[in-house]
Image: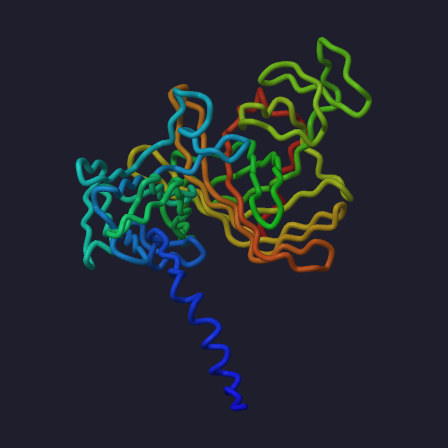
Length: 354
């Protein structure tokens, strides 16, 4: 009996399967060109959105918004509040384009976006692609997609700054990687108005255990007064920086910590200011966590009531849990200035400059 070579035998067995199966042809996959780890260099340059294959232009709906989410990670137009919407800088469809211009090139495989004004430096942004995006063969994306990105900021403290004053600030850092958690900080910033140079001290903030609720709280709970009185776990996240009155500074090790910040405040058109810091390390003894080369970048501006508010990002080159490296650290930052009358006592000042 003649024997077939093993390779021919396998081909003969697989041939009937191949004849009845088709390769999966998925919908177009988007990416932002030159966004290294989600970071672009030049806020004045066009944004190039490339797809893995040509798209059907009539199905392409794109917007660029400030990344602001609720506690569940939903964009402001994805939550249950019909009146909340994210701040939108640009929107494109074949029927209407706002906030700039856009052109489909490369046989409809690339969208070149040119915002009418530079996008903000500091806050994390989201390029949102609505569900329904299809290729020319009709393969459809059934879910909304968001590509997160932002811009680098070079520290050059060489211009006067009048928008970011010396004072006390309350910051919320919603950490996304490597673990999802929230860090609350009280900060004392000293700003040289002639150069914009900032020297500050950021200190861990804990919920105030001395506050008393109308109801009785368990021994394992503390009283949260804002947005309404409620007994909560000490680790309960804050909803907004306006809940600062529920927090007091606590920098005493091993559970407390504090770190010095060097940075710059650079005034921007439209009454805004970009605040960015040089890399610094943050060390917590319990739990044993070390963040290497932490940087903060945020854009601040006065709100309708004159309160200086900011949104931005926190990044760390490496996060060590114990002695184990757990990758880069990433998170979103919310903050506001707090008047001397409202700020709690005991917020540490930065040490004198060397």
